[in-house]
Length: 139
Image 1 (tube, one colour):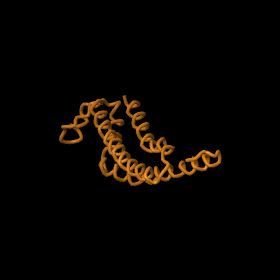
Image 2 (cartoon, rainbow, N blue to C red; image 1 turned 120 degrees about the horizontal axis):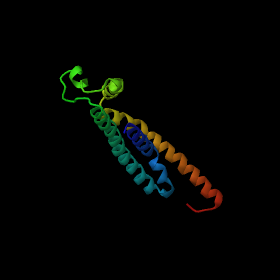
Image 3 (cartoon, rainbow, N blue to C red; image 1 turned 45 degrees about the horizontal axis):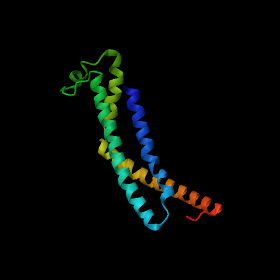
Image 4 (cartoon, helix red, strand yellow; image 1 turned 60 degrees about the vertical axis):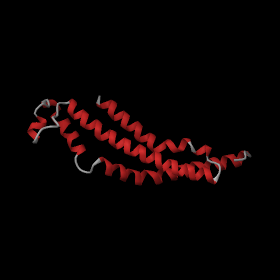
């Protein structure tokens, strides 16, 4: 179950970073660039929000799967149903969810990933433009 969660989170994160690269070949005019930029910003925001929500949600569900009690009033009540062999693992999951909340993480990742997407898209655009002019294909 945990491997599925980790693989899904990894695939979703990679998709969030690289999805604009699939749409760059369809950008030919200035109007397309503006539409591409606005669409990328909107979809990246939605994907970042969803990715970090999924990470938080799946971590809490995984902790409950191992026997962690979300209604406990103290650590001993929260961890009383967790098997001894899983205690260290659940403690790591607990520490993973503490600290900065997922909405703030999503905002910070959005601020970092959006310029990276635009830079990668611009590089791909200029490479494709160079290849088209080299082959004599009108863009």
